[in-house]
Image (cartoon, rainbow, N blue to C red):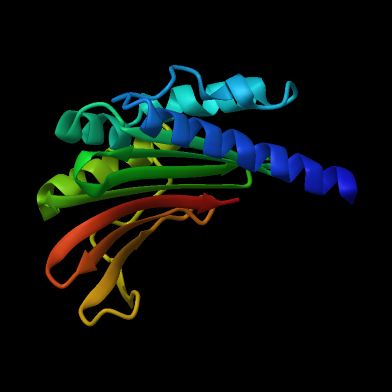
Length: 185
């Protein structure tokens, strides 16, 4: 029990050191390798996850729109790895994977994205996560769910038939504010 608490404290410290040092030094970019502060048995997993994420459509879109990330972080909790990137204009990307491969989630937050551009990104993200054939998402039959306490907040959900995969458009009023891709096998 004490070892688990100590491990969590170390991992939280790694996250805070990376985020705070990037901000304090005024860096406009994050380290090329976020695995540097990870325990030895997790370094390769963190590095591979980061490499896949920064080559993905959400990171590429945020980099195109807002330049290099202003801050970033890595957090490890049991079998989960969480990477986060903050960009100009309150844009961000948070991605989490259970290292057993059982669940994944990417959440891109950005303003001023059109519905057409958002749908194209979701479709690219599905293929990026599941290969050229995707995960069987039915794009022409979304469900709508109420999201958050703000009036007019809603999520449009597109579900697939493999690994409980889904993509989501998150709206505040009529504006899209986030895109989500997730799965749980």
